[in-house]
Length: 213
Image: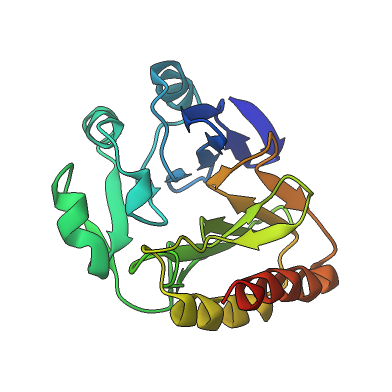
């Protein structure tokens, strides 16, 4: 694992198919670590044990499902979180212990923000780090593309364009310092920025969604 913030660790990349790179991120906390997204690397799960294990694993959507959910759950007694709209898909691997229904704050500083569109139960997470920054985990709702811009995860025949536009407008009002996707086509999965720069980045993503309509 690579440390990318004082309390945030990035797993080694995985390549589920050509042109796509995925990673998971471990947020270390005094009252229980949170793993965002998922990893299939056993050695990274071992590294998590060295950093205090995993108390919660929060998935942004069903594309992150994998057999290691059970490995992580059994090894660390980790509670799995996912959106209620995708609980049937989750049940094929492991039923969620925590169901996301609405926008709310859990664990004191992890805001759950439902952002349907990429998938029916897509969720983003906004974390107020005690180290002074705000981390926005966007799953596949927004990801860094090859030209360094943020692009919406609009997939023909899978995504709901109108719902995605509404979700992007919701995310536009946030002011993160670090934005972290679960998948991307390039080698970089996150970007640090001035919070005031974020709305323009989302506007660019919105323009791309409208242009392909």
